[in-house]
Image 1 (cartoon, rainbow, N blue to C red):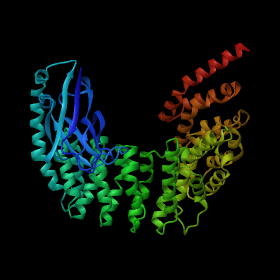
Image 2: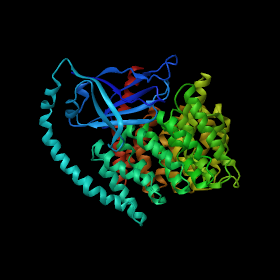
Image 3: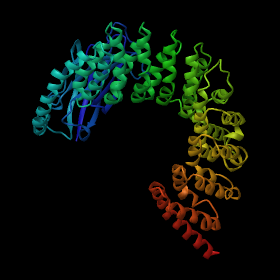
Length: 577
């Protein structure tokens, strides 16, 4: 069963060439189409353009009979443009919509459901396919009305009593009260239908966004981000994105700062097209803001905006967008504000990973320079972020270089020697947070680099981390012990059996180290020779199963099934030989 519709508009704008229509129900897109005005250049300019309407079908099974239908119209300025200026919309219960007949008109409304003067939506065709008396359809929907009545009573209590109360608290003098009121409004919005949310919640946000009070605009910017997921892609594109762009142009720097902090979340929900076409131009403009705190906020949203756009997509468009973000980082890296530069280098690793194969060589070179940059350029705390993101950047470098050259193997160190130099510099850092980040991820880096590069360049740092003065560094490297040893050539693995026993016997007063070793037993069962597995790993497992600490015994016992499976496998292999 299909609902056949043919829609046009009355009094077409003189500057437009057509309309773009979207028919939806609470974030569920039912149909979208474009209709072009018949206004050729050869025609007499004095003749008003005529709308060539199209007939289309909406599957009735896709329609939620309990939800209102929303039809949104935009004017089009040229045939290649998808959307343009908002013209009007109709939000109507399905049963009421079905009571209209072909060649009838419905008043268009603004975003707050107020009828617009001289703007009509014309139903050229409304019919059921196969043929069915539309007047009978509302009777089939009647059994839903009593449920809707109860829901309407509850929503009236929310919209008439609760939301006005929250609205007052949103402009309270106390910042904590305003923050809690924001949280309350978001929770209320999550239980309202789309029409009620537009009429009540979005009206509140709009009033705040266009208020002269600076704090009210800041609250509006925060709400646009918090409400984005509830509103969905359609409303984020129609409402949130334009309002954020408006707030980003505010004369008050605190408002601009609050606005840019919401860009990432809104772009994520609205989609790549909105992020690139509507938000990115304003985002780039704010990157050049005269106030350093606004530029710093742009830096903090850089990764989220890149992730929401097509910057990681294959093809020329994706590479072009990635180049825009790469250039923005270049500007931030040379910014006059130390705080902006620090933030830029803190997010650089995440940005490289987000851009993926479209990441530029210049970004990788900047990343490799972090450990050697002078203290007059950035704070030394940036070394921690460099260490933390090192495996992700190494994997991205290996992937991008492999796809571009068509070669495999060798890891990122062989293709980008600068990465190896940077890693060696980080390993010399005297601050334990940097060494801890490296120690916790050295096993991941080993699998990226490959056996040869691991043996040549990572074995030394690994051994050093095992003997580190900081207990957090030693515990960090133990958590990935079996994974690192598995990345070594088989001939180099068994030397670490004695190291394991030394750790266990030397940690009688530090049971957490023994627990770390016990948790590594499932991996250790799979990486040694048959002789070493029977003579050393089996003995180690039973030793830890008799430990004084229950947590150690429990972790060791969980590895028993892995060891038995490995022993059976070895027995079958020996029988086959």
